[in-house]
Image (tube, rainbow, N blue to C red; front, side, top):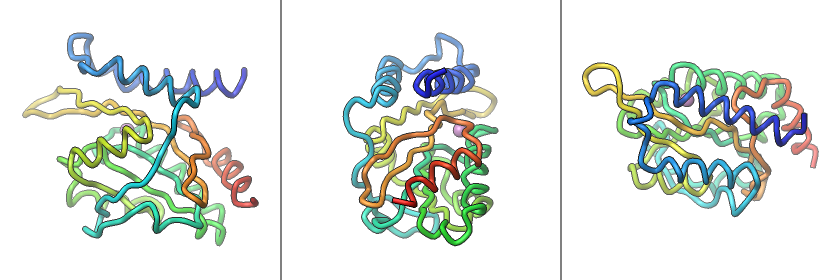
Length: 205
Ligand code: NI
């Protein structure tokens, strides 16, 4: 199986998993946009990434520019995510632990797609993963803008009690280069061994 079809399958698997909670009637109105975004991402159409300024888990403004010189791992998710996000963040954590001192040249960034609920909880959440994680939040508009720039889809899926909701979201792991350039993405549930392999390759350049 080619890498591309492997990626395609993983993304479809993720979307199926994420959408499983939503019935057809609940499908977000921008579903076509989601499909197009995934398509553009998979086939490398257009640009991915770009400048951002968001607020970190300590309430400080952080911009992409301050991470120049390091590889940047960017992950969009939310702290209430039941299992996909934590599993991917754990894989990133294990890979960074395994890299030892080289990990100082890699900046992992978690951007919440649930700024409404991920307020104070963000700090404890990212602290549960690698110590170098920066957790970012912002206004709904700021988050949407950054997510669009990364072709990361997300939409609320109502359900449960008391106005509870889940968020259907793209769960890929983005890798950006030392100059902030887009290097590529790794599918959801990429294991730490594969992450290390890819990180080492780019760190050696
Ligand atoms: Ni998730």
